[in-house]
Image 1 (tube, rainbow, N blue to C red):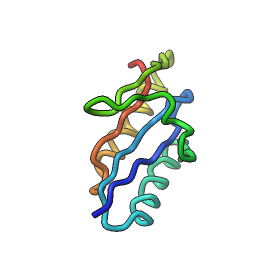
Image 2: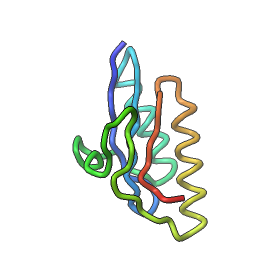
Image 3: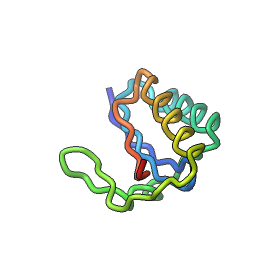
Length: 98
């Protein structure tokens, strides 16, 4: 089993970190991309979202982004819920202020 950390951007430009433990990184990445695309979110390059977080015991946002639209809040919550339902995903963290 391998650990992986994927970075993404979701509704209203929120940064998202997705922690994974998997036996197949390619499969996990494709599953994550599928969910992100469903919610009009995009996978980021290494370091593209990491700047918004710091590692303590777990990943914590350094800079919170307020989500003003209820639609964005709902879309982000649904995105996180669906990502967390994937077997390999261990944790999903966003810098959205909800």
